[in-house]
Structures are given as C-alpha cells and as structure tokens.
Image 1: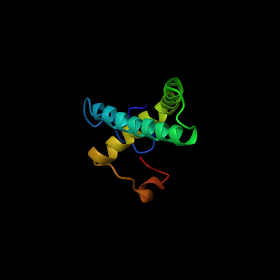
Image 2 (image 1 turned 90 degrees about the vertical axis):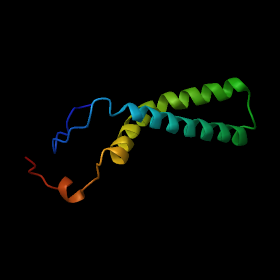
Image 3 (image 1 turned 180 degrees about the vertical axis):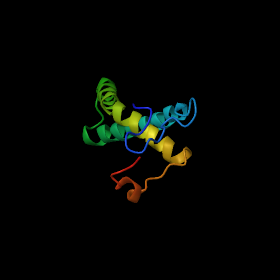
Length: 96
C-alpha cells in the first residue's frame, strides 16, 4: 500500500500503529462471514458434516482476505481518522 495518495498527497497512516485497530475490524468482518456461511450451509446443504463447514469457511475467509484487509483499513480511516470523501475535490484534475 502506498504511503501517500498519488492524487492529493494524503498520508494514509495518520500516526504510528494507527491500523492496529483495523485488525479488530477485520476480525469482526470475518466473524460475520463465518456466521453467514455457516447458517447458509446449514439451511441450503442440510447440515453437512463438520469437515464441510471447516473447508468451506476456510476457503471463503482465505478468498476474502484481501477484501477484508482493504475495507478494514478504509473503515478505520472513516471512523477514526476524520476522513470523508469530497466528490468536488476528487473531480479536480490539477491537484498540486
């Protein structure tokens, strides 16, 4: 991940260790995914064997890891970093 935004120069890591909290957010998102996959398997596959649950959940979490990593950091910026999206600023082409 780059240190600064290539368009506006915003420094992503606001303070040292800022994204440690993103690990907890990623964990929370992972728990939600595990619950959704588990409940879906229970109802759609008719309560399969335990190894099926473990295999499907493991593959799903591994597949979603890059997405979870990125969105946990984005949520950390929005919730605790005082960052908000400004479409008028984003549409400017000549940003110094």
